[in-house]
Image (cartoon, rainbow, N blue to C red; front, side, top):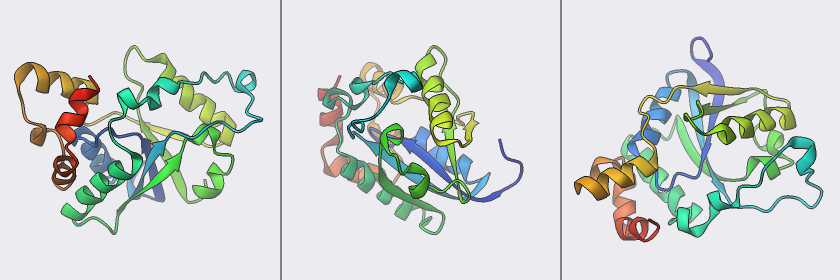
Length: 196
């Protein structure tokens, strides 16, 4: 963790299917440590032909990008984040953009230069050894640090879906303002329920 507010720009990567209050809380927490943040919406991109799986010990997890786990297109997720950013009038500190899978993006350091950006992610959830390993591989590949933070609101999307289903709660409680309006316009509740 950095001490004080960094002049670097934090890069927070994820699929965000959909963006939730937990993601928004993480963004707000990151802004206490970094001056600005880019939310990188990671989308499916194939590995380059010369990608050496053995060298990096990388396990391809295509299931993470399966339609059954991703009811929204990256562009729709981008619109939800833009709605959130506009609702909190934070466009001067928060931006979002579509980002290819970092491990397969040979120009990642050109897109997010290490001298001006820091990769920030939450600590690996308990029982998910792959999560931490992927970021260790990422650090070796691009020869740069990854900053891990404890999530201020440790609530995974699968937990939210379970709560809504079991306790008949509303998505409005779990999607941040601005993002929620877009979520409803694109029939978010129905689309998420079809992915269960």
